[in-house]
Image (cartoon, rainbow, N blue to C red; front, side, top):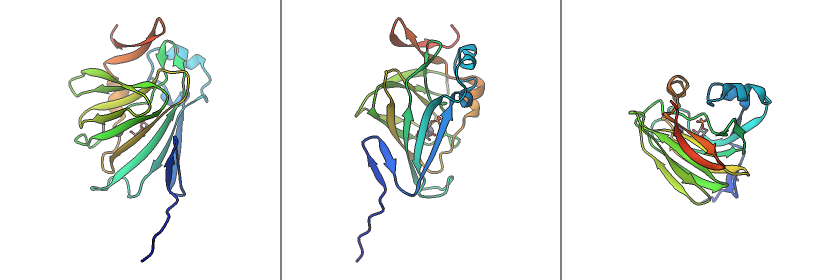
Length: 186
Ligand code: M6P
Ligand code: ZN
């Protein structure tokens, strides 16, 4: 019987193979995400905020499969708010996900459907279970690239709309050089 090598390699903060799909977001793709929209507009619209490499072994929306992603989030700030991913609920809200820290440091920001927001420290080796019905985004609080892995059900989908209209109830801000979660209404 045959033993094959799919040359699908996840190692040292990179995910490679012919089936890997890469995408990225620059600052103009993150319009309306940061509190200080004026500060974001004053920055280079093409500045890279993060890259995502994914393995989609089945079609999006398939029940019973899993997707795998590696996100590389650059360090930086918009005003006093750390660079972060857009963040999303799952479109199929009753779907959970794992995130885990690989390189760099940051905070996983989580918000439930009641609008309660909390944070979990991310660092190499930290493992994070994101329950269903919980929105998730990651902020890079360090000076270097933050890489994290993700694994989620192939029928979960992304609901960005709720975050675009309502946002998270708290933001991760640099307060005197330290990351702090502050209520968005302040
Ligand atoms: C992780 C996963 C992906 C997600 C990516 C970037 O890799 O959760 O599903 O797309 O992070 O996050 P976002 O889609 O919120 O920009
Ligand atoms: Zn998700």
